[in-house]
Image (cartoon, rainbow, N blue to C red; front, side, top):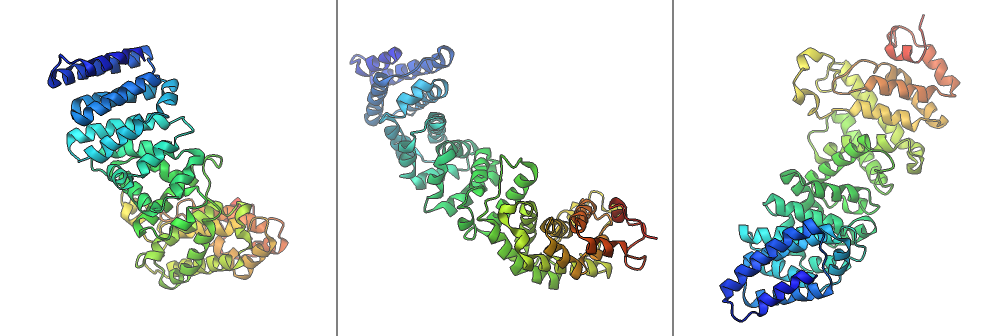
Length: 442
């Protein structure tokens, strides 16, 4: 980069005072930074050597303004030229900058934050499409404690750019580097906090990649309760609104959910509540996750008869308690009185429980004769038909009941016979569910 020769001349000009030299360097670098964007300038190995001379000069003559303008120049070079990125990634310039900015100058002051932001922008741009970025990863992780301070910094931009650099270093096959970190749990907690405090979109993207990893399950249990809830909510959100080609729940995580659901379903059945203990808080979210994956044969949930039985019994107990007027289990279809009352609906400790149990039971019975028969033997068919009322705390439960019954009746004459034999005493004659199934009681 021929224009950087001017930097070398300024460094060597013996007629300049140090103040005058720094002022001219600042002005020169500022003009060059603007020119890089407009003229697509690139840097070569000679240019990197000149910038190393500049860093050596700044070691002896510290000047924050010159340093910041140098970082702005590199940020723009890395952003605008792939050839510049290919040259810069191999340069010892990066190690020198990381040492100077991260180790020597990160003090949390506004001046040091500007340096950190620009360095992180530069590194994030530099490694975005470069495969061989291991040297940058190692340089940052060698200062892992300081890097985590930048990631967790109260300054929103510093936190954002730290996550930006991290996601670019851990893209694709490089994600394993992040998952291999000995302090991964601590890092996940930190990433979650930056999402909650700063709405850090890059941190969220990292977490989305982690929850799809086969190693996610092994790192889930050590997390704090609030972090577990956050990640389960994220899984539910992604599973509900993402295409299967872009998001999947790792098969290693499903057995963990099954174990937790089995462990805690009985307590919900007995207490009819999930609000008084930690396991119950996670239970509803894990049932939702199992409902999402239960049609995917690679998870083989259909073979878990114990889980199916526990789901039917829990659904039966909660529904019966509601019919008996037990507060919290009752069906809420008084929509006018509930209008605007989110606490009574979405924050209720059993919100969505009956809906997701119905969904899970129905999916587990899809083309599974043993499960279809088991639900019938547990009086589950009558139970499902009795769940046909609208319920504010269980959105779309009627639709899931219809789908579950279709799965239970498919190619199962015994189940079809049982449902067709229901009388007014057991199921409402005008049940919308039975109408949707094409069954008319006389």
